[in-house]
Length: 244
Ligand SMILES: [Zn+2]
Image (cartoon, rainbow, N blue to C red; front, side, top):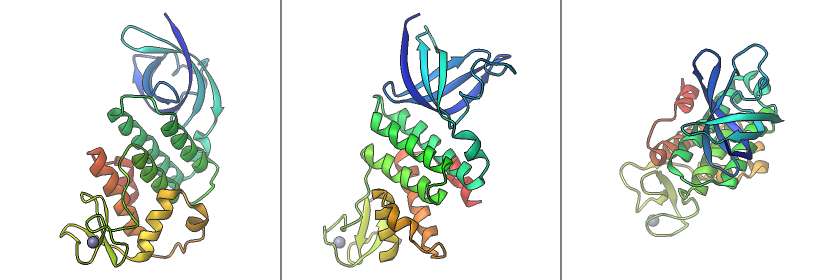
């Protein structure tokens, strides 16, 4: 079987037979792939824990007729233990891998930039670099923007004016002024729009300095979730987990 090398982030796994698993992996250069890891569920698997969700690994893959087979995996980032140890980090990492999974069901070509964005988010969650919710929301907005669904936040999507922005419409594509807002648009404050801009830009100075007690964060989370669900067309399970 022909072999190829790549690096990848494990998105999810499902059991196969007695001892094997099918691993869904977001790779840097081959997009999203599904490959069998043989014997991975045995106690002394040669893969160890390197093919668990949230793990980043250098891979050697054999191209199969129906499914590819993981031939070698060496760790590049042991993120899983640190993520699983913290509930908020775990929920948000779940949101990252699920968004990446679904995004790559609609993208049919590899995207190293999308790969690095997902790896960056999972790594930041493992290292507790910022509030887990900020990392998850920022990832979702940036990944969708990179795929072509970028919300307009600095001007009204109808008239193009920057003054009097007071609403956000997901189907409309972003911010709206008072004169143009459509019935389904949510009311947003200037602070909430500023938070959305910071998430979209990955402006960590602004996000880390924000007041956590500001109840506007809930509205912003709902907007990010709605934006991702609308453009990916299916509810994001992990996001709902966070609401409950
Ligand atoms: Zn307007």
